[in-house]
Each structure stands twice: as structure tokens, then as C-alpha cells.
Image (cartoon, rainbow over all chains, first blue to last red; front, side, top):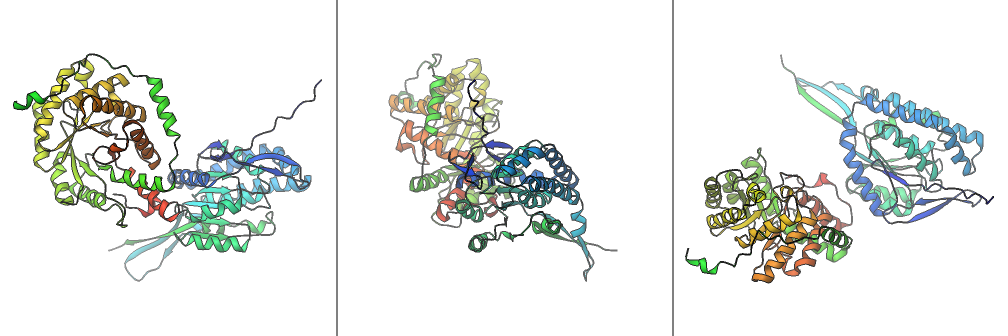
Length: 287
Length: 305
């Protein structure tokens, strides 16, 4: 019998609830540490960034207006679906040379992190809101509201856990995201899109692009319709560039570069707060 | 009337000009693959902005809203190199407000009339509607045809109504809205275009914007070809105005390509081509600023009206 040819999956990008190739038609090859070619991955272009931001903007109103409880349910649903596909993700991490045990820990930590933020979804509002004493007859209160469209440059070194650790707080807070996933290990992110797709996340809330950071970072950070930038690589030149470009429309900029993404110290609601705007209301009171 | 002798020979409207549906749609598809870049794109975007009839046709239009739209029409952007739009388009009872606001800025005032959008009124009241809009100061009248009469086959009635409205317009330019979304076939669109042009239209316009589908590219191509054939037959240049559903710059540029490929560069000016749109202007502005600065723009930084 003839030797069977493997049927290899085409790893596509995910925007607006659809799996797409780059409009440019370009791709790059992802390899493991030994230099073995694993798959072709879409190489996003400037226009893909533009389209993704437009999609994220379109999805934002509905997502921000949903009840926090509903957003929490959806986050929990992502965790549920991911739990059912643990093996696949473990395998994909191992393809890149990560040890069995470590890969398993990473997938499980990912699921737990989703559940963690799902829990915060209808609670951070109370924790970060306040009633403020003022010296006039006003009832004065402050509450967090989502910033808008957030561009996320996901950690290069932690393709699944890192991605979810930065994505979950952003969408929990009612923002929509354009994510540039790991350049070195793009496959788990591409598969994670399939999980998102089958877990009630409305199209356009999470848009996952794959491509080269050097090429796309500039366009993400210059875009006037991106309200915040979350950068996790720790490259100082890139950070400087992002800060310069962010000044165009005064984007929120958050830099984060932890050594170990599995650390439970990373689980706190302040990352949600990083992508919130505080709205203060002065309500007249009279007797 | 005395100038009867100058009337154009009227073709037999009961005869149908066959339209190759597949051919029209394929040609549109092919032309949509044209790519316009850098300087040409910048030029085309500014031209398209200069061709916009900034429109508000809602029951909730107030004088304040119309005034605001007129300011936007005259000064779409603080940059003086960015042109004004061609006209503002309002209901007859707001024409005076618009007229007083735009003054002699060069922006025209267009008014829909003749029982817009349905046209289901007596001819007398529709003519009165037209005269009122002109007296209030409209430079351009956008009339609707009687689709019911057209679909019933009463082509002469449609023709006579358009001619009567043209007379009521006096000096004002007449745009004839065919409401192609209700005409069902390309042959009907072609026939209605011919009737309108022979009856005295200065412009033919696709839609009211109240019926879906509004302007589509294939319908526009059919109408452009009617304009071309009319030009060959009579030497008169008739304008074209697609309206409704044109929201982004990319689509607008595709329309310009259709015009250029069908009628040539003569038609690439606001005297012979217009876009009826409300949200298109802002998208064109965003793209123009994108070309100038290199940064993709956000709607947050452009005026809504």
C-alpha cells in the first residue's frame, strides 16, 4: 500500500468570527526548535490590521453593553470548551519541543485563568467603583467603563497561557481586542481561535492575527481608532516606538513582561482596571 | 408651447432595449478589481468629496440639524485644501433654512419634491410641491417618478409627468429618481432612464434611499450606458447620481471608475456626477487625512453632522 500523506491543517487568522487568510496572500513557515517545519501560517499585512481594527470597533458597542454577568458566562464557556480540547493543545505545545508535563501544566493553567477572570467579570465594577464625598449637594460616584478597542501584542514565549493571560482581562472588561499572537509559536493561538469560535464569543470581539511584529507593530500603534495598547515583549526600542505613536491619540499603553506566565501572582483584577476609563457622575441632590 | 419644435424625437418606449445581465455584472466585477493608489487615489477622494450631495431626509429633521449639515457641507474639514461638497439635499420645507445658511458659498441646495419618496399623490400637488421648493430657493429638484404607472406600462404618463415637473422647475436643475429597487429588471431601469432623459431630466438618479436595494453598481452601469447612448443620439450630456447605500470611500472610487470607463473623463466633475449620501462624506474625509498623515483614522475625531 502506498505511504499515506499527512493532511496538514491550514492555520488561518480569525477576525469578525471568520477564519481568513491574509488579504496579501502571504504566509510564513513556523518551525520547532530543531528547525523542523511544522506549518504555514498567515502573515498579516497592514491592511489586515486595518480591517481587524474596523471589525473590533464594530463589535465593541454590543460587547460593552452586555451585562457583566453575560460576559462572565461567555468567558467560562471558553474555559469549558478548552477543557474538552486539552489534548490537542498539549500536543501543539509539545510540537514546539515543550515537555509533556510542562505542556499539560500550561494548558491547565490557561483554563484556570479563564475561569479566574470569568469570576471577576461581574465583580470588578463594584470593587473599583466608589461613592465620593464632595463639598456640595451632589451625589458623586465613579465607575469603570471599557476603554474601547485594545491592540494586544501577545507574549512571544508563552503562546497559549501568555495569550489568554493578556486577552482575558481585556475582554472581561468589555473591550474588544486585536491580538497579534506569538510570532515564534503561532500555532496554539490559531487553534485557540477555533475554541473562541465555538464558545459564544460574538464575532469581532477577539481578532487574532499572525505575522511579523517588526512589520505590524507600527500600524497597530499608529492607528487612531485603537484606544489602548498592551505590549508584552519587553523590547525597549519597540516600547519607545509604541509610546511615541500612542501620543497621536493618547492611547493607554500597558507594558508587561513577567518571567513566568504560570505564576498565580499574575491573577489580579488590576489588569482589568488597566483597560477601563473611570466615569464620574455628579448627581444633584436637594431636600 | 412655442419651443415644441426643439423637442427631441421621442423613441418608442414600448420597445425594450435588451440588457445582458451577466455581461453587466461581470463588467462591474472586472472594473472593481482596478486598484487606485497614491496621487490618483488622493485626487479621486477629493473629487468624490466634491461630488457628494450631503443628504438628510428624515421626519425628524429640524432647522437646527439642517443648518449644522450646511456648515459641514461648506467646511467639511478645517484644512482649506479639502473641497466643499456639491450640494445639500433636504425636504422642501427646509429649503429656505438651507438656502439662507449656504448663501453664495457655492454649495447648491437640492430639494426632493413631487411627493417624495413614493410619488403617490395627484400630479397637481406634486407640481405644487416642486414650485414651492423652487420658490424657497432650491437650485436642484430631485423628483420621483410614478413607479406604479411605469410598471403598469403607462410610459407616456411617466414621460408627461417628468416633462411637467421639468417645466415647473424653471431654472432649477431636475434630477429624476427612478427608484431602481422597485423597477425589478435592468430592462426597466434602462427604459425608465430613457424616458427620463427624453422628457428633460438633467440628471438621472438611482434611488430615494428609502427602498432596498438602493444604488448598486450594475444598475448604475446600466444607467450610465443609457446616458452614453443618449449622448450619442442627441449630443446632450446628462448627469448621474447613485444614491443610498454608498458608505465608504472604496465603493465611491469604484463608482468613479465605472463612470470613467463608460462615459469618460468629461463626466468626472460635480456638474455631471453626484453621490447621494450622508455618511460617505466622513469616510472620504478619514481616507483623505489617512493619505495625508499615513495614520488610519478614527470616527471619534470627525464631526458627526
